[in-house]
Image (cartoon, rainbow, N blue to C red):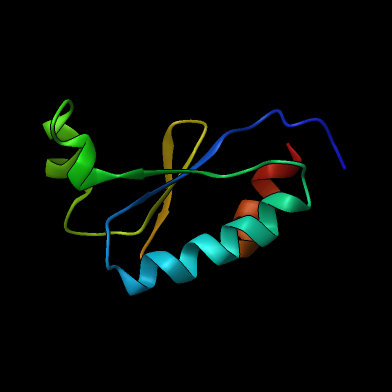
Length: 86
């Protein structure tokens, strides 16, 4: 395993089937790099950050790599692995 130098976050919402699949994929990929992916429920976060739901709420799940949008709807596994190696 490598030292985690990146952060991976999944933007999600309760009851989202695609989000559950994406989280399983992220956990498997991130484990290869010694990273635990975080999650943010955009509906819960809207209480303090309504812009998050406004920007991402209609295209979940969204993968953020180091705070920037990396992919949405599907986890781009090949690209994510390549970017995590950097």
